[in-house]
Length: 359
Image 1: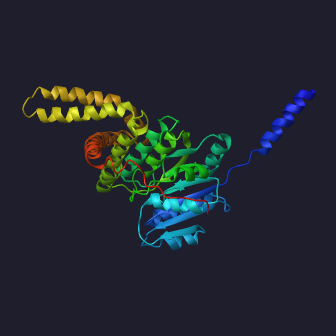
Image 2: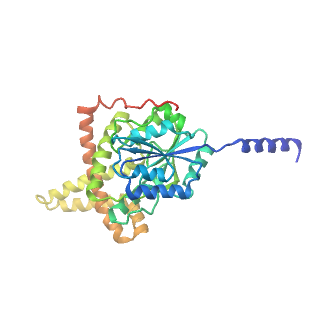
Image 3: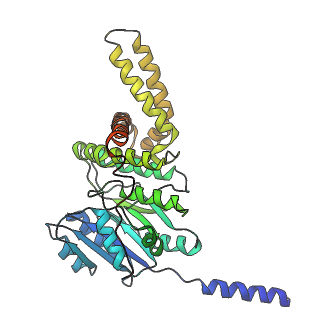
């Protein structure tokens, strides 16, 4: 090895040795966490080093979530009355010491390599502002609707662009200095809603990079029932998301806003109209069949995924719920559009951000 090669090798060695892993603070908002919160904390105890800061913000809980978090050694903060995960996460971030804020929901469990993957991404990509992960393909609840919803979420993230256009509070990490700079989460969202998406839009508008890291995965433990799913999807997600889309004009071809989803929405309503028209015009049945075939073909990769994971019968059942998803998403978009342009446009022009300063 000549002198030049020796100098280069020495320089590379110094560079490699000088790279220091960023420190991480895990922030978890919880209302009444129950058994799922216990499982969340158990997974952290099993897979997260004791030196990592874990902050639990109890949001007006009436169960034993506060005591449980203390028993597991977490730093516990508490609000006497509920105010939503946005406010709770902001408080946790304001006292965190880590370079990276790693937000988790109280109903997820981490894997052995989850934290390691997060640290590696930020270490290797110094220009990256934030990352989001994915649910895994083994949801904690076994009933059909929970399996369908969580697997669909997994599929959506695993097939989307790694250049993300939004943030995700259930499994998302962000550099703390950037989080403080942009003002944290919008505290007008007093229920679990689109506060994470709104933060992502502000980050992108400010020029920051967000990456979807598909190998950063957590297990979702939530049990979905028809009433809870439709309520959350329609009132807490679709309606406020529509208003947010109009505010920021973020109609990107990604995640739930892919072109195929938009086309499917139109086809679903065309199918519904054709089925209703059959009562007056029998030939409309052929239009309905044609639209149904096109709708099925466009979404065949989704159903193929369900079939590979849970079998043919499971995949067949998902078709009904998937097409229902397009129906209520379209209805929410129409109502949300009218609400935005007619009633709430002036109220959501500026987010309500908490003034977060260094502790």
